[in-house]
Length: 205
View 1 (cartoon, one colour):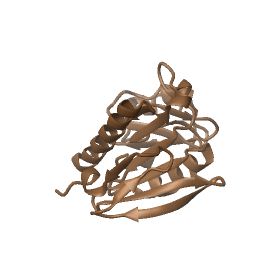
View 2 (cartoon, rainbow, N blue to C red; view 1 turned 135 degrees about the horizontal axis):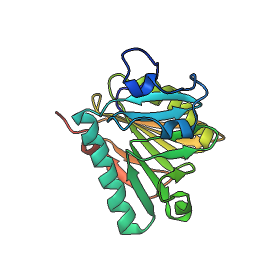
View 3 (tube, one colour; view 1 turned 90 degrees about the vertical axis):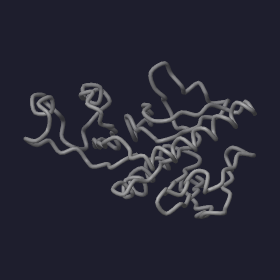
View 4 (tube, rainbow, N blue to C red; view 1 turned 45 degrees about the vertical axis):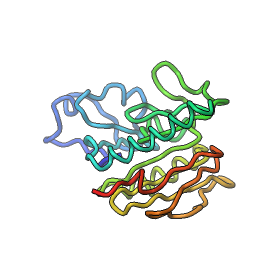
């Protein structure tokens, strides 16, 4: 996700924000989310708080594109599931309504959570690609939210540092498998046989 900040209504916000009765932070719902303007921003609600982000930067998009391509190629070849890329609404009941992971994968046996307009339930793998101003969200609020929701594997891609951190959910908490750098290959535990090289996901500028 690109730069992400908690929503704070102000006089500088578009008229649609000031003219409607928006809830205070901590009280946002999916119904409130559906009333938000289609203004090119990305909106997410995590534990009742609204977060907003502008369009991602090219470096971020490069890494997201490499990850979704790798997941989709592997999924089609082995018929193991389906991968999606943002923007897409993901409902994590009691945690986020919605969140929009950069890339996600759902294994074949759980594709029933894919509904016509959104995903309702925890994906099996989520990948978030860091941007300079959002690392605290992906490493903090989303990190805790994904673990709480039961996302089995969480990848944090840092395209600037050219690293990938792989976390696996064990006993309701994430365990760091490793922090991989250039020259290393990241192998999924949730999706046996799936692997990517760090330099392919995080190409040099």
